[in-house]
Amino acid sequence: MRNSSIFFSFLSAEAVLLSLLLVHASISESARHETIEEKAALVKTLQLTDLCLFTEARYTRHLSQADLNTAFQDHPLSLEHFPSGSFTQPPYGITERP
Amino acid sequence: MSPWIEKQRYIIDFTISSLLRRKVKNFGLLALYTLIVFILASTMFFTYSIKKEASIILQGSPEIVVQKLVAGRHDLFPVRDIETLRNIRGVADVQSRLWGYYYDSLVKANYTLLTPPAQTDTAHAGTRTITVDSDTDDSSKPLFTLNGAALEPGTLIIGNGIARLRAIGKGDYMPFRASDGSIMNLKIVDTLSSQSELVSSDLMLMTEQDFRKLFGIAPDYVTDAVMTVKNPSEISMVASKINKRLPDSRPIVREEILRTYDSIFNWRGGMMIVIFSAAVLAFVIFAWDKASGLSAGERREIGILKAVGWETSDVIQMKFWEGAMISLTAFFSGVILAYIHVFFTGSPVFEPALRGWSSLYPNFALTPFINAEQITTLFFLTVVPYTVATIVPTWRAATIDPDTAMRHTGE
Image (cartoon, rainbow over all chains, first blue to last red; front, side, top):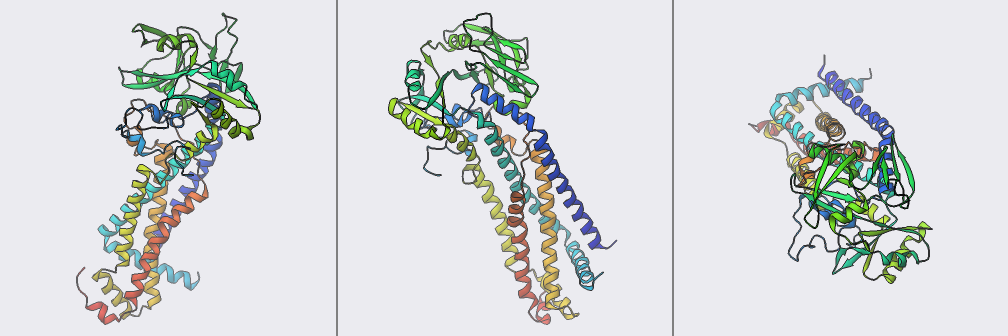
């Protein structure tokens, strides 16, 4: 078999696999609709405000409810030191950035 | 088959043979390139999906949360101020919330303790049923039931993350050290579903009576208040009225909550900029390596090809195919691996960083929200720059005299 045939066969296989994954994404989105609804219902019923992503500090557990002086809330030199702080932004409204 | 296609196939055959002559270098290049695409695509898939999921789930969050501030810090909210909030024109309903944190020194984890809101409502979430009832006059009726399990004084409903971490479940007892030093043993009557871990992993639901006893909070204080506004377009107006009526309060509107999660994992902040900088820097090195010229061996190869009759355009086509083959292979492999990484294996590469110092990390499967824009952006960020970068130096080398090109020796 020619090198070009092998290459194009490989590339086609990858393209087909990617297409199948995109189909999987589309199917999963519909299939998980019920799970998302369950989470949304729980949020509404329990009046929750935040995702449970980072439980290491109170201002990372409830990002949107954090104090305005986060992360200096414990004392003036209490610099941000939790790892999740490097992934998140300050709550909307604290900074002037849109 | 058209002669043009046949010619391109011969050029591709030759290009692959040429690439295989420098196996180590080219496979190394391909592996590194795939890794860059993988990291970029994983970051893009993960952040987009979690943002999208947050925007859907948090649509049901309270319209306005009102916190009391004392010396710039969140403080307990006086129940008497709820009436002040009710009197604001445009407000449909005001409810109090009781919630807080409890540190479990045994497993070094923080839990969120919450009292289910006092309202009469029944929500069907999938196969699970949640019932909340405010009819406190009827003492025989539980305040809250989950899937048939009643939440009564002395009982507890826990999130699935806590159940997993402490290896406890329905029927077990959970000890708490109350504010007065006494030990409270609460019986677990149910666990929240594992599907809802993204919002409920660390939750503990208990009755108001147990909550107040545990933290020693007087009946005339709550944690904060939540408000419903008659006309949603008046939310910001109502928020500004709250600021006037209760100057020591802080209203947080739903829009702010949603925007907070829209800006989470923003590429301009923290670790994201480090990941993107590393990827961009790696690309700059690739491009620099290619654009700064060809190796002596490659120049000699071009000289020989020209000497045996190849046109300049043929050489450029060969180099175009070289760039396209490497970048397309890296692109497809990187994107496929990223999809598997994020949506099938739960992002194990990101997990240690996301977990941070948390003992309790939710076990959740992200819904794959993927759109054509993400794939197109990735394609133009990765494939196009590399392919273009391979053509420019080749054009320079292919236009010089074959004799001069062949006189260079060594790789």
